[in-house]
Image 1 (cartoon, helix red, strand yellow):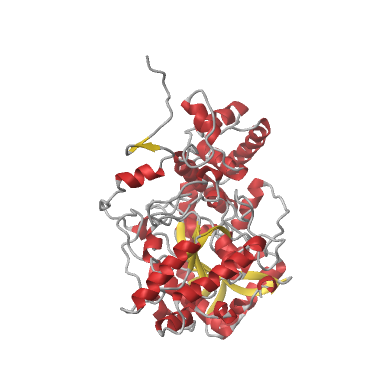
Image 2: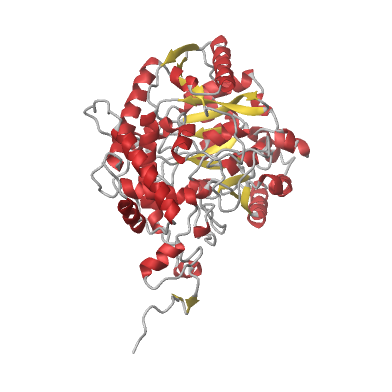
Length: 480
Length: 96
């Protein structure tokens, strides 16, 4: 049974369809691994064993009567800011500690025959890039337990990296799927804004948030995307866009594709990180792609746009959480005092809510939401111009490998860690991180970015890369 | 533009957040830095199109289709306390 964790989703699907393996057996295997590594990794906030086994039994029973969708019966871990009926959704915050959702998110509905292993850990309200801001303790990186897994979908990445879940769902507002995928050596896919319904995702920054899969390979992500993409009339930002056959996109290679490498995005990275990604570009050139340098000169603009947009939208979205019903209920003589004493967010969330409230406060100053939108549009226009020179942008996912848990950074400086991932959110582009090497024994991620709704290009390049190399098949020492 | 500590306290009140003196001091510094940084950025010329990121992609439907809501018992089950099918709340006024 131990080799199950190394099988692809397509291989697991074949075993289930041929009834050589039941969903109950597969789910029990992953539940056992999840429990075994929980103490070391702290990947889950809640392990939902009963829900998982009930769904597994239902999938097995249905399979005796009818043919099921490709992914049916394969368990999934879901980030704890995506609601699932009957399971707690805490957003890693004391403010929502006791909230149990009465409905399923759209993506959970679409995966209704996938046993829910549990709700995985994240930075509080998805605000952070290291998973240290969770009210339920930090997640640890399976490659080195003294290091962060990245964030905010750190739990989603860590449980896949540790073989505790065959795939997971995360959300990406400024890199929150791709950066932890890079730090944990897994594949993390942020689809185009609007490609996947956000109904049931607890909103952080509504114009940037997007749900996507984390898995062990591009081929696995293609299967999950097929299952979760599509228009949802209940999400006004959901795109009325036909969903292509993502599996078929894996058939094409990179011959004839133009890959653009933004030179400034390499210059700001650790030498070994930049070197590993450049070497990957060379391999893809040998496989038939055309590779050339392009320019992405924006740096302060990227960080400032993100800060203003994300914090302003967060301040608006989180205004609804008073902490009175589902969290710690404070005391006060007036309703205002009651709310103020009950909104016990962590320091990072408080800081962002303050910046966002200020940006929305109508003060006559340059640090306002509108300025953020103007900057975001300028960056999106520049990216559009780059896609006239190339088909896919290729760059590092993060400037460094995973850093240690004990480090502290200046709040503004820490946003520069996300400088390579934020542009895709500002422009609503699809982007993916794939493993492309090791530096000091830790995974390095290569990021691919494409024009809106061109996930097919990312699947082509990413899958070609994973056919050429085995970086995505490596396991961390801690969990072998 | 100069940011004062009073503005920071006013912002905290609007955000309904209780902050320590150290937090107010540190946020004061942070806001001053953010304002200076934003003021220092010169924007490229805006083109005619002012579409929001994601807007063109989303092509939103004119109206959302009404979805069935929660049943009464599901709503009441979310409340900390309930009585005879109603949500029970703490008394906020003395009655005469």
